[in-house]
Amino acid sequence: MAKKERTRDAVQILHGRYVKDDPERKAALQEERMNAEVARLIHDLRTAAEMSQQQLADLIGTTQSVISRLEDADYEGRSLTMLERIARALNQKLTVVMTAREPELQEVREAFHRVIQMLRRSRGLTVAALAEKTGIDRGELVALERNPGYRPSPLTLHRLGTFFGVPDRKLAVLAGAIRDVPESLRQQAAQFAAQSESFSKLTKEEQQVLDEFVNFLRSDV
Image (cartoon, rainbow, N blue to C red; front, side):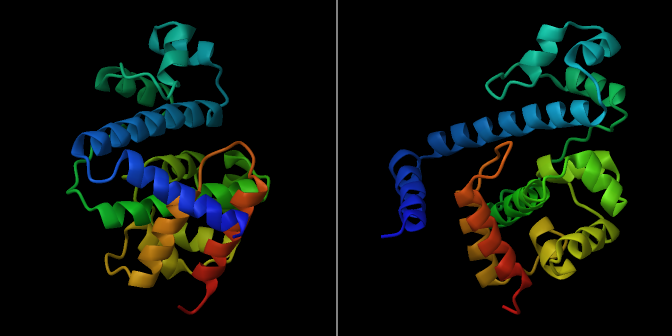
């Protein structure tokens, strides 16, 4: 059995063994993911603004250690008030979105955020560099990579599709702009999201996973 297949089996086995249909474990897993997303979003917005933790702390009247905790995925003490202060300091707008639970669509949207991030990293580009090459606002790129509730505009999807060579419509489906999701795309997106993780540099296996998914998006299926 190939290494890739063993890895896929391992992901499914671990999820089945430790999560399954247990509501409490699913809720805990979702909370961990949300904490990690918020931590990464703060970090990426700060670095995109070319600020140190100390500089951001000075702007919002707190300490560097507080900013460090807010960028820690394990920290659970973030408040909306603090997030609003950070958003204003970074010239961003904080929004709170509540949506119905749609596990299948969530998997597809997760695939969108991850494939954009991995495509960028596969070319060795920073967020700022991709913004310069595509004409997309740097803050928007951070949001669409990190914020599960963010909906990119058709123009942004067109620019990303053109730059990365991926059909606009399939990116729109992944981003949630088109609700009619073909079953084949949903399955491939779920599989991709389950296998991909966020690292500073793509591993050989990640690159293979990315290539397979992008080839599927480029196909006529």
